[in-house]
Length: 86
Image (cartoon, helix red, strand yellow):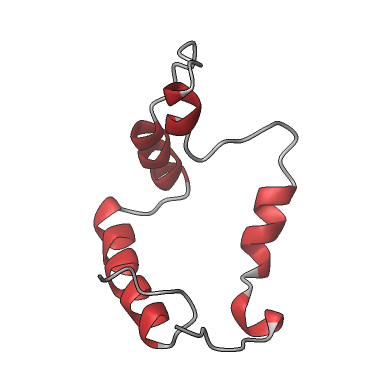
C-alpha cells in the first residue's frame, strides 16, 4: 500500500508540536514497553494520565473518543496513515 504524498503544512498541527517540544521536563506518552523491560518503579498509569490531561485542557472523554473514532478512519481513507485491517 502506498500512502498519499502530503506536504508538511497540510499534515502538521503546529500548536501541538509547540506544546510537545516546549516541555521543560521529559514526557512519556506510554510507559508499558519500559515496564515490560523491567522498569517497574514507574507509578504513573498511562490511562489515568491521559484522563487527567484531557480534563486539564477542559475536554470531555466523550468528545475525545468521538474525535478519535472519526479521525482515524478518515485519515486511513485519505491514505495519510496506513490501514491496519488484515
